[in-house]
Image (cartoon, rainbow, N blue to C red):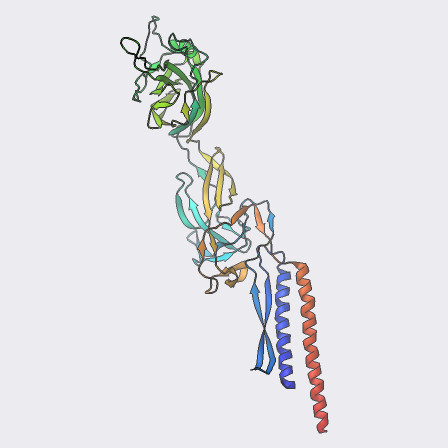
Amino acid sequence: MDIFTALQTAVSGLKAQSYAIDNISGNIANSQTTGYKRIETSFVDLLAEQTPKHEVAGTVLAQSQLTNSLQGNIASSTVATNMAVNGDGFFTVQAKTGDANGQAAFSGTPVYTRRGDFAPDKDGFLVNGAGSYLQGQNYDAVTGQVSSSGPIKIANQTLAAKPTTTITYGANLPATPATTNASKAGGSALYTPEDANGLPDTSALVTATDGTATANKQVSAGNAPAFVNSSIAGPSLTGYTTTGAPVQVTTRWAKIQDAKLADATTTPATAAQPAIWNLFYAADSSADQTKSAWTNAGSGFTFDSSGQLIQPSGGDATITDMTVNGTNLGSINIAFDKTTLTQYAAASGAVTTNALTQDGYAAGTLNSVSVGTDGSIMGAFSNGSSVKLASVGIARFINPDGLKPLSNGTYAQTLDSGVPLAGLDGSTIVGASVESSNTDIASEFSKMIVTQQAYSANTKVMSTAQTMMSDLLNIIR
């Protein structure tokens, strides 16, 4: 290597260190930028001559090295729609290109970012502080199905009323109810309604043991006191009409037959019989229970001697045209199974309710939103319903450091990064939080000192080479 080559090498060193200080300054400048990933500088030596015994360092090449795979600190925020990726993955975003006919238009080209300070714009679209719009799937609040894919929109939504169609119920009915008269046969409390003349009236009962539904059998208001005294309280809940009007549904259980084992010693032999229960609901929930008519749910609930449910065998029963306070709720399905509806001995002699929900609700407006760990955006409505509104679009890359950096904290796919892979795959989304820059100020200052020293050393090489050239020219003089 001659003196002129040494000068060229020193110049390449100055350029490389200048490139490094450029990256350092950018890292420091973006130390408070949400989701920013610092850029490291790597140096590559280029040999001028490469013979086994004559290898001379020619120049140096500085290259950027991304740190997209390095997680930044996750900090809490007060904005519910802010979110951070904990682990691998990027938010899929697009740029807004304008508004056409009152509708927002987007670029259609997805890019990727870790900047998750998303908040609704004037149209309800989620946009981060750099102007990138979050992509994903929007869900219909009523059906729970995907309504569209693209920019996520969280606007001031109204959830339409939904009528009650299904009541999910689980309970244990006591083998010996405590509040009614004991039967002659099994010590169980049985109910036999009477008519106005005090004679037995079985028209309100469903005794079929095959689960056959019989609609609209009813205990009259006149027989209500005897009915209440010979039955036990069932579940009470609020149902909803098609318009969202609440209707209080009050129920009672009446046992009308004891279970008996088969007895072959009698003449003739006695066949086994199941225990039979009937479920009734108050026709007038606003009146005292002893003054309201009670409508039979329409099914005979039968249990064997071990307390296991026999009928209805299909796991549910249908109340046809449930009418309370003069309001028809329509046909209501009561969902249960052999494991959730049983008849075991209970010291209290009362019904033990284990599960009681219904699927209806009144109309509601959106009160707040939250982001789940799986990227689901849930909406809490004024009627108490929590509904999935959207799902965040997440992309992963085999080599995230191979992405091409763009402005506004976004990255573009390259051949080195590989194709985007959808889904979190073990990563999680942290709601009401943002990911901070992964720049360490102390580390950047340390690198700055080292870079400055290297830059000064290269200038010293240049001044030394200049002195040597001057000395060489002085020989000629």
